Image (tube, rainbow, N blue to C red; front, side, top):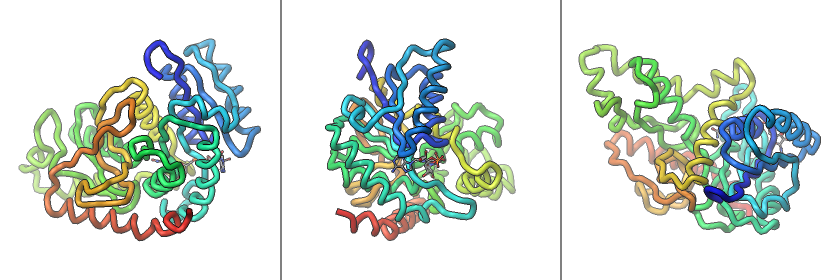
Length: 316
Ligand code: NAD
């Protein structure tokens, strides 16, 4: 899995997200072997051929359209299969159809004797991460949802634009559901060690501007889907970031969907929180000290997810 060894990633679902992730993996030379699996075999085959034709220009790796048996040797399986949001649809609207799809996919993967780490990207990602954990029977550390990794990136990008600072020097987190009830943790957002809230204290419009900045981050997928039908480049790069953190045993802190068992006073649900990621998956969930309003919003987000999770809980 690590330096000098063969590393294999299997991608289930070769749509916009799965193939953008594959393209980004290839360009960043992260793995030696990449397996593409889709219910539409021709699509997976066509994508594999197309990606292979880029190899003479860059990475040395093997890419093929495979079968579920190929997951057996995979270090990581990324699931990006299923329905995506139509214009006007929320992520939670996708639960029923994608839970049924996941039941089948996860059982096929586990039948291969897969013993690696799952990364789930399909929406609603928090609920489908829970479904993957439940259907697979794997320890919680080895089932990771992309959670708010993308929302956090959008937040950092937008704050970077607002303050005209490189977004890589912006620190902040979006917690909660990857969806309408997510929240910004203003109490811990900082740039060059200076709290964001102190940077706006002399600007009478500062708070309203930051609130509007967050609303644009939260609603970014709707704005992009209205214009181009789907979002995929940002999440693809977020998934590659997560893949590297695992394969390179980085102990990096990323906001992912993780099973909570008492952290933040929450239990038995997957939700976006900062966590330390390494070769074992989720090493530790980081509990930020939230102020009262932030905690209230996180609890509200958790309740929304729990209420929506019933279809998953009903499946054996
Ligand atoms: P898409 O429609 O382009 O691709 C979905 C693919 O899944 C298709 O190729 C389809 O054939 C395949 N598929 C469907 N059922 C399958 C099954 N049973 N087994 C194997 N493959 C199957 O969709 P997309 O734009 O790539 O989006 C994929 C998912 O990712 C959606 O749920 C979308 O909402 C989600 N997404 C998540 C994030 C995030 O931040 N987590 C961001 C963007 C999109």
